[in-house]
Amino acid sequence: MATWRRSPVGRPPRNRSRLLPDLFLDRTAGIRGAASAERIAKLIRQLGDKDYYVRQRAQEELARTGFEAFDALSTATTDEDLEIASRANTCCD
Image (tube, rainbow, N blue to C red):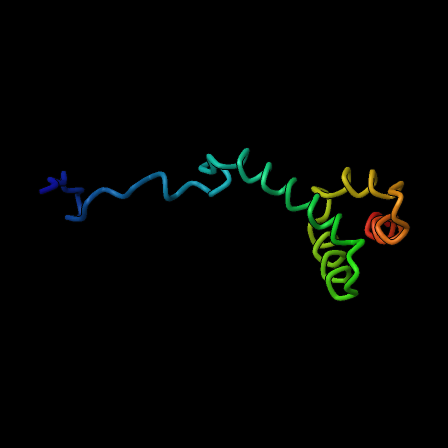
């Protein structure tokens, strides 16, 4: 059984770490960044998919991703597949 040191008002002490923004407590940022890079690469490949709706959804998601995808998109503008290059160029604009 846990023993709590009572605070002056009779409640257990608050966990101060919950008061900090999630930005400071995120220990998985590197892992998420790698997964995000893999996800961006997958979305760029999907820009050349045979299915129009897959291409469109990938383009919309890349546009929402914003600055994180910019480097990969700028590289994709010179892709051999003209559909990928065109859609990547549209996302960069």
